[in-house]
Amino acid sequence: MNINKEIILKEKIPLIELKIRNKKYHFLLDTGSSDSILHKKYKDILVEENAKSVSSDTLQTGLGNTEEVEYYELPIFLDDWFMQQWFAFASIDLVDYLSEATGKEVIGIIGMDFLVKTNAFINFKNLKIIYELGNHINDRNLFLKRTLQ
Image 1 (cartoon, rainbow, N blue to C red):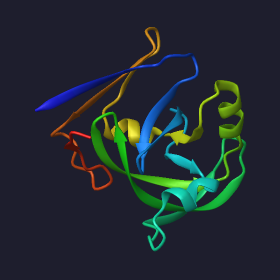
Image 2 (tube, helix red, strand yellow):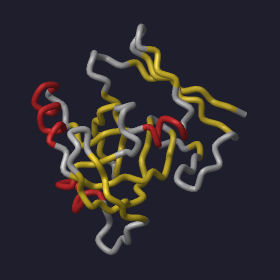
Image 3 (cartoon, rainbow, N blue to C red):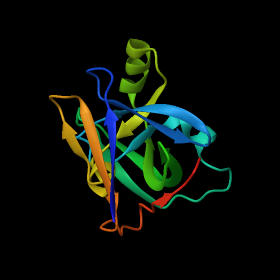
Image 4 (cartoon, helix red, strand yellow):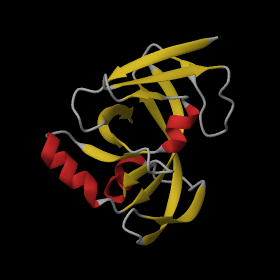
């Protein structure tokens, strides 16, 4: 059984809202980023105190800079869908600019890893993202279950 979820983008900057640890945050939707990334200043807020990283790697930015990063698996909500998602924590200057420009707390980037796992279709003309959530998803990084939260 597949369930489609449609998100309407309210502005031309493609921001999506996710809930982490009972607080809503905004993320830039970036099809040019292979990984989902959170600004490292949020690590102490979002990662449990004794949590172990699930992976580490060298991340390359769009400007060609590199940074050693650790990945953590975080529980997130996309509306009423619960998921476990890996995030790298890194320096992202763009989020401060986006927060100021939009008046919303932008804390990171949603990359292709998330979009592929949720079978996302982006309709740029109508500013919509359609996620197809269903049985085809069996990746360790994304566990979905229906919730009433």
